[in-house]
Image 1 (tube, rainbow, N blue to C red):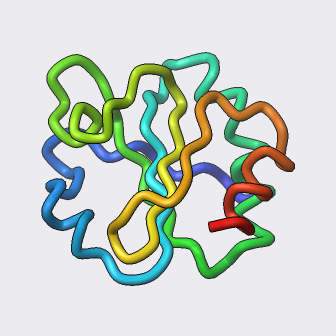
Image 2 (cartoon, one colour):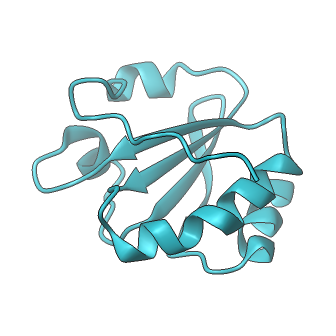
Length: 108
């Protein structure tokens, strides 16, 4: 299993307009490095993404006042927002199983 990449800080994260303009398939993962639910989801997320290499994966650190997370109305971590050409097509909140994530990736 490959190691998980770090979450982008609010300064590093793309603006909503940049996200809306992304071509193709993008999985936005909102969470934090210290969140237990986020850490627990990483093995399932890495495994699911290894079976769906066509997906761009962007990890965004979320929290109160973080504009990108608020624009997607993120309430719980981790929240996975699946986009096709910048438009939301699916969402998975607090996934625990690889199949939860893989099913959403396949359907989108």
